Amino acid sequence: MKAYSLDLRQKIINVYEQEEISQRQLAKRFDVALSFIFKLLRQYRDTGEISPKPFNGGVKLKLNPENLAILADLIENNNDATLDELCQILKEKIGVKISRATMGRMTQRLKLSRKKNSTP
Image (cartoon, rainbow, N blue to C red; front, top):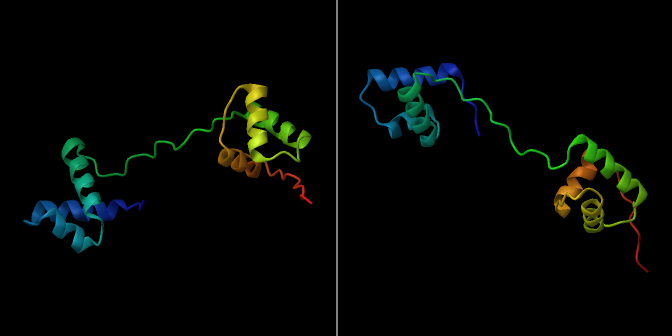
């Protein structure tokens, strides 16, 4: 998602108020997405504001810092376990179920590597 400057937002509002121009033409003139024009004009009509709305967060981690410490210990003690096995061990230990992909991201976040056993 692009972040558009306050100056650009103000220019779009000024042109919209001073000229008889469609929203589609505004988007084309300023080389922005039509959806951006829709949202900007709706926000301006509803609140009188044109500043970008604040970012509302993202995805919250399933594991708190205490759980991450437990996970680090589990990985060190079971460093030959697969990601699936680590997920199962973690679920048994603290009761939190995470996916294999999440386990992979958590091991990267902790900067821990797992020993890979080669199969004969």
